[in-house]
Length: 292
Image (cartoon, rainbow, N blue to C red; front, side):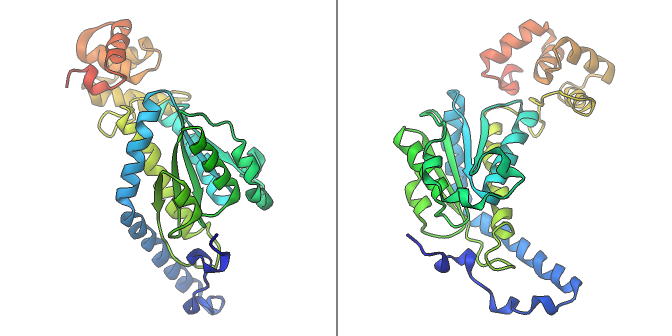
């Protein structure tokens, strides 16, 4: 197994050895430079990311889940991305597990990452696509989960920030975003964390686009749970149909706050029930239901 000292994310950068002597403005400039490099590192992994998304989508289409597994910062980012897919895409198919359980989201439980048995005991299924997130690529909790997922027939994906790691070797699909040494040596909540967030954005968002959860770049599957989101859903119906706001408001109410249903009602001139039937026949894709 790769030793911690040989990981690029753990290396100390000689040119940063006296940052504690620098003025605040210079520190901001240097960190901003680091952040700009992260997007370039993600760009190097675009083909790997696309392959992972294409492996995730069939699992979701068959009712499986996109499951994130991580420890520390990586785990928190997975939980964050999963929690935001519900209101954005009206989907409960994205879930996140963090070493140490739910309490570890707000309270550091660093020792939990060494528990490979706990990772192997997660409630995964053969229909899932499981993404193991680890900057080092060697976190035992994540490795245990990925090995278990592979053994039961799930799709396995590794998201790591070092090359040639045990986690990448254990996965069917590896996404290696090599960001190099951190601004503060070993603080992988920085560049590595930013890279992981960018990739998770892509995995969940683009998988949902492929599933028909958007119409163009409009979040037509938005879950209406407050007035802000009701206003957004109304504006979406207006944009899709060209209907005036009053008509969009009425259609959305008749559709039970479902922007897709309301859009089909107005564009095709059918009832809410007929609109739902058209959407079901189109596998939930609004563009297909509209005959476009």
